[in-house]
Image 1 (cartoon, rainbow, N blue to C red):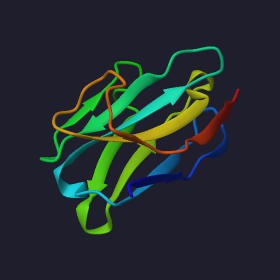
Image 2: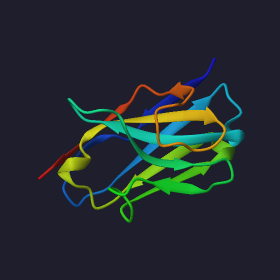
Image 3: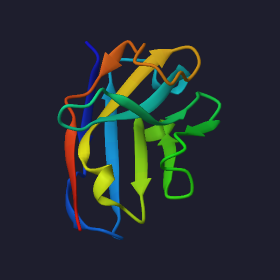
Length: 121
């Protein structure tokens, strides 16, 4: 069975940093496109960042220059480094995986349980 498990969320002050991790099992990790989404209360789930199996990266305009995404295929893990955090970054962050290319819609095959990120002003 496939599992994606996020970790690293927490409470930080505006301007601070967090690093989220997503540990994957049960899939051919190196051939999957991976992505991070987030969802704030009352909001739709939105694309944050994605990384292809070739390690090409993609970012939402709202996080460009502040967030980076990377993957370690040997550890079956994808990371989201979040810097210069803003209160509007507050959301539950989800890890997702799919076979094929990175897409910015929610058309992913597998999802993690989510991890809460709260940024105080």
